[in-house]
Every structure is written in C-alpha cells, then in structure tokens.
Image (tube, rainbow, N blue to C red; front, side, top):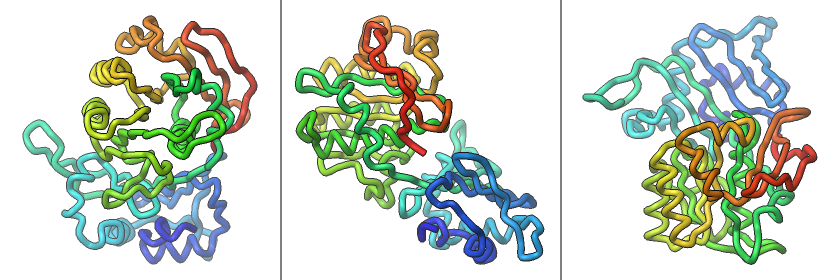
Length: 314
C-alpha cells in the first residue's frame, strides 16, 4: 500500500492491512468509525478488515487519535484552517476527511473537535485516460469551452486531472498551453504544503484551497492562462466568473454533478450558460458497465458527436 496512506494509520490497523489481501489499484477509501469495523471501499464494492481470529476489527478511540497524530505530525492545531473545510491533504495527494463536533466562531466554522470519523480518500492518477476525448475538445487551434457532466463517483475528477496534464504538456492535437487550476477542494493537484502531488503538466499553475469564483479571477489576472480548469461548479458566483473568463478570451473546462444534459438545463443558475451556448462541448459520464464510462459527447447545439461507452477511470 502507498506509504502516504499506510503511514498515517494507527499501528494496530496498519498491521491488519499488511496482512490483508488489498487490491490497491481499485482502492478508493479507508473508512474508520469509532466502535465500528474498518471498511475498505473499492470501485466494485466494500471489504471489512478482520482480525487473525476472523472477527471484525472494531475501531477504538485510540486508533482515531493515533491516526490524527500521524496525519498532523502531532500538531492538529496547526491544521485548523484545513479542518474548517473538513479535510486534510497528506503527502501523496490523499485526502483525509474528518467529522465530529463542530466548533463555531460567530456564524462560521472555526474547527472540528472530538473527531470520531475518518475517511481516507486514496488518490489515483490514471495517465492517458483523457486521450480519447482530447480531439473533441480542440478546434481551430484552441481549447473549446467544455463541461464534464457526471454523477458522483464516475471518474470526472480523474478525467479532468488528466486532461489538464495533456493540455499543459502538449499533444499531437495542440502544443502545450498555460493552464490555471482553481483547486478549491485540493483534489485535482492534491497540494501538500503548497506543492502539487499529482502531475498536472509543466505549464500548470494552481490556486489551492481557494473559492472557485475568486480563484478563477485571480488566475486570470496573475498567471495569463490560456485555459482555466475548475471542478464542480454550481453557484451564481461560479457562473459569473466563467462568463468573465470567457469574455477575456480564456477557455474554460469545468465539471458538474449530473446524469444528463437535462440536469444542467433544469438548474436555474446554469440554464443561461446552456441557452447562450457558452460551453461548446458537453462530455457526459456514467457508470453503466463500469465506473468512468463516456456515455455521450455533445456540441453546443446539442448535436451528438460520440456515443460508445469508453472507460476513462477505474
């Protein structure tokens, strides 16, 4: 198992995982809950970790405390800013989500204490998964404004990450361009101490842990990107920032939760983007057959450009 993941687990759980038959390439999450078993979440289902006597191993409070100590290098207080967002990104790009008792300061979340639930989301890079859609995203020597539509857990972030890398590195379709990434949830670049842990290419600049709308405008002003990429848009502020970015001559690649194009059209905040044909390509993902399949690619007029199911992420 990846050293970054195994190294932050309590010694007792680490020993059990060393003995277990773990399919690392398919492992998505390690879930720890006080007084509940350790659950490994795979792309195809779940496994529960057992002891040598074949009983479920039950997580105790000491396991949680030891794990948090290792995650924070024994200084959880120094991660107060990250805890306000509900997660800490560790070396290797893995995101550790935590929940417990929320501490409020006025009307905002200050921190989380009495943490009893930990979810380690294992980061996977699948280089090359964006190659099959890349030619649909490029036209007349530029990157077309593209929206990736996907239900949760269907590989949209993995796909977006690789598309960023390919555009930044260059390909047979387009020379490498400057890409600005607004990574509000630290999932695309998975920055640790400001340094991306995932490969986003040589011409990519990352605005980490910054609200999307503000980050897009900051990147536009400061880094002169040809393309701005952002994960999970949805607010009115996001839409206003996207319009500003496009009006400044910069291309946008974004993702959104949804099962079909109709899901996007029916949201009042996003309807205008569809009606005004702001996005020139819609890439729809699904999980029929296997997670991470391209179900359709449409142009700005709704014309179907591509239909077959193709795997982009596992």
